[in-house]
Length: 255
Image 1: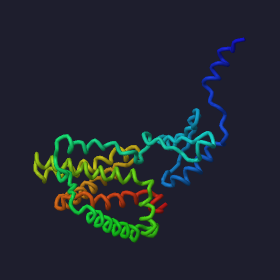
Image 2 (image 1 turned 135 degrees about the vertical axis):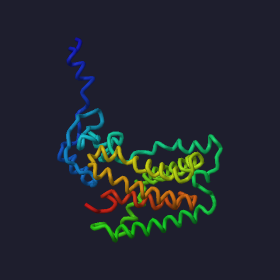
Image 3 (image 1 turned 90 degrees about the vertical axis):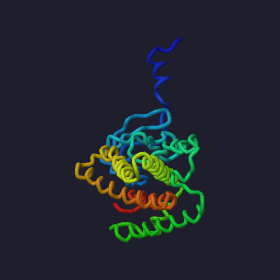
Image 4 (image 1 turned 180 degrees about the vertical axis):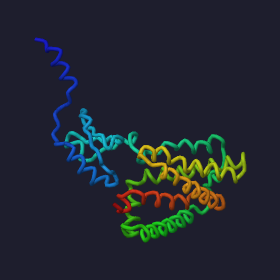
């Protein structure tokens, strides 16, 4: 005896029954514990799949929870739908040096005394984090911040920040050769500031907040001038990464 079309359709489409209890309250509580920086203004259930159940957070971020205990108890974030950092996708920028057979110094990556430069950067980063902890109301102690920043889970962010700095160096050196260092400094600093616009707009930034990018452009000019004199991004990468991480609540402890 053959099954009816409805029975065959349900057998193919309907996923197996979940052995875990999932609802909006549990999702909100779990996300608050694992991602305290998320505002969690709105949580909407999108529906189940074969192994995961999806929820939409604040109309912009999709998270997937395992439906079965043997998969795990964590939460998977679809970073393509979020404004957080994803895996770095600009690694091919380094191919510019390899394909054109240009020296690493043209990306402000000299090979000499690498250990010393990393040590100098680490010391400067520690001083920067200490200053942040002293000046920022509600921030945790600097040694606690440094311990959180140094966790393995932040390695992808460290790689991304490093590649951002190398990209700035590669772009500046080549622009400087075409239009001169002054115009190259202005152009790269403006691009550095404008790069924050998409994320800010997706978060509902006001025009006043967008105008604050002028300050970032000015900061970019100062940074590029210092990097141009040193010809090295390694030490700056340490400082840049540590200060970048303090913007997250899970690092700074600031509510």
